[in-house]
Amino acid sequence: MIPVDPQRFLEDLHHLRSFGASGVGRGVARPAYTDPDIAARDWLAGRMAEAGLEPVFDPAGSLFGLAEGPSLLLGSHSDSQPEGGWLDGALGVVAGLEIARAARAAGGPAVSCVSFQDEEGRFGVTTGSAIWGGNQTLEVADRLIDRDGVTFGDARARMGDRLGDWVDPARFTGFMEMHIEQGPTLDTSGEKIGVVEAIVGIRDMKITLTGQQNHAGTTPMALRRDAFQGLSAFSERINARFRNVVTPATVWTIGHVSLHPNASSIVPGRATFSMQWRDGDTDRLARMEEIIRDTAAEVAGEMGLALDFGPLLGLEPVQMDTELRAALGNAAEAEAPGASRVMPSGALHDATNVARLMPVAMLFVPSIGGVSHDFAEDTAEEDLVTGLRVLARAAGALAG
Image (cartoon, rainbow, N blue to C red; front, side, top):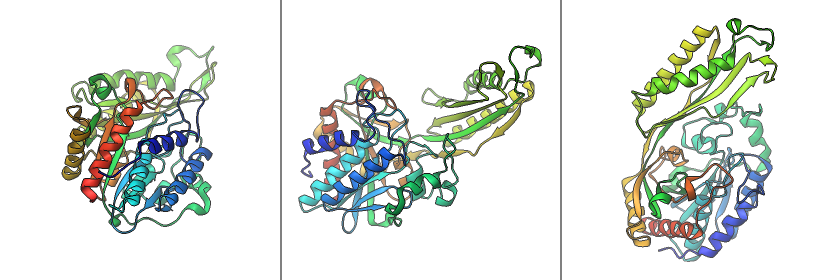
């Protein structure tokens, strides 16, 4: 096994937490291209250089720490949700750094590491790895807009002359990503490791209903064209319409709502909301899209509202590579005998995009209480170290 240093790994992980520390528990606020995100990437680049790796920022702002010659790539992302946890993505980045550093100090095998940019979707869906993996072009991505009206192109320009050329994916033999589970399964079962068999597919789009802005005190209920009431009707109906199509593993979410003019005494004239759905079956995802569009059109027609659909963003379900997954399974049994399981990932990860370029695999460690995307996100440090050892053992077997 590659001789990793668990204490150094934990110290780096805690130091990374200081960039954008929320002051609430161990939470962080480090969205893509913000000052804390850029400062964190500069620090990571320095740590990569100290380890004897070549730090390279690609045009999207993803940071690679490159070993010489062909190598196995390990990593994740270091940006966070606006109210994020300290381990989501950061765990995989620092684990990749520690294993690459330890491997180089030991004279091999060759391991590189990466922190992809904007995995959390300030502008899209896993934007940095989507561009590198060919699911998105930089030209199209530059026109993406966040909720504050900032374009992706303007945001990445904040990284200035750090941005360099694209890293050739042909230099890597495969990619493995270590991550917190972001769910309750491992924590509930008491198991230490989840070996991922597949990552679900995702679809995401914005829907806008436009009615008539009007006085909230003088406009009779029967004459209102209330955009929010349209959204409410859509939300109620969509659950019933999905009932005979979805499975217990299917999920869908309206996670962001914007009303205009968003004032107490005005009937909302416009409601824009996000609609996201996830499943492991491509046909089911397509059927859900059809139901969403039909239901929105039905509500708009009944309530006298105009309807607009934004671009459909998404990624297909991805199966993990058999050889890499087996290496993780063998390593999990060696490091945590009888305390691992094979499981799907309901969350989206950069590995989905990288799978277009090379073999990929993932492992999970428990999330306390199943909590993630929240300042309360946490994992026991002994479980973090177990995950590190599993990944290091698997990397050594594959790259050695």
